[in-house]
Image 1 (cartoon, rainbow, N blue to C red):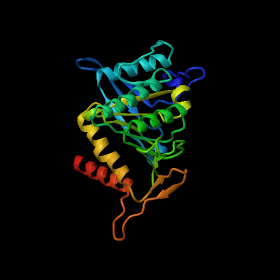
Image 2 (cartoon, rainbow, N blue to C red):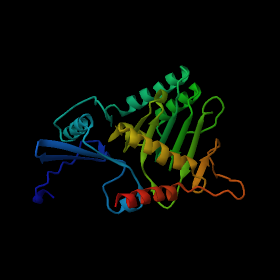
Image 3 (cartoon, rainbow, N blue to C red):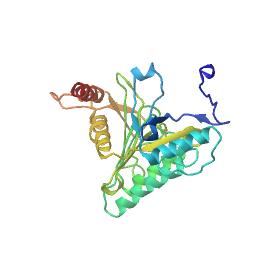
Image 4 (cartoon, rainbow, N blue to C red):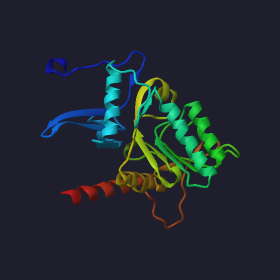
Length: 274
């Protein structure tokens, strides 16, 4: 790669770079313009065919500025400790996620709409589990879509009454990470690379990026997350005792397969774009 003129940087000592970022600097007729891509999955041709992931391609100046600073951080040209748009580990991701969860508690206490929906691969960080328990004890409804390890126990009286946890294992490996905050009726959605694990929050370079465009936020909430929460075919529900049970549906009721539904949605979108 270096022989072809590519500048290769090997990362930071003691930190694995796990963020999925691409920064493009392009000379256009009106000057230099920057674009960025933020993904939830690896830039890997093989896994792209069997993993479900989400990406955002943007020229939003504030987001691109932050991503530029992340690359400067990785190459040793910056030691920035806070970012305007991005949640970046190990710098600020843990503290900012806690603040966002606390904000949902305040909304609920004030009678405003409050809800958390997290879709991710694993929940194993003790601090994150405690914070979600606290949000449940405040009364915030919490839906967690966790494909793999989940150290949180839902439905424990007085501790996690408002938490539901589901795992979907289907044709494709569920790999995308989405963090949804109802925020009093003005929802925030973040996508990115981080699971709620100690290594992701403290020992890796991770990025969560806000999705600002209203139509994209609506799509992620009303199409993607709604389909996953409606699944009755490939889903297993985590019980309080740590076991997983399939969903039972009334006789004669069609089962909902979220991945098949989303395949249909995107096939129709692709056909209409041709």
